[in-house]
Image (tube, rainbow, N blue to C red; front, side, top):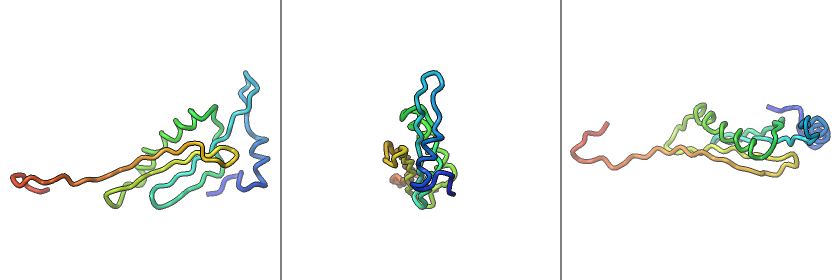
Length: 113
């Protein structure tokens, strides 16, 4: 899904719409959260205005378990990734969650399930 801030032509508009912290008059940075569920990359074209990179980190960490819930792995292993970009398009943080199914050795005296 494409948001309102797609491409370089809209970069200036995105920056112009960036909010400020009223008490300080400081611009609030916009972060973009691209997600990858092991099959599909979904770029974030809209982003979110957040106070700082730590706030963006918290959003990325909250998103990972939700992604895992929505896309349970078909196989025995799957890695979910959230890449956080700044307004310049640079990846400033990457968070990942891996789900791994292992089959431990089955003891001979214990029936298989």
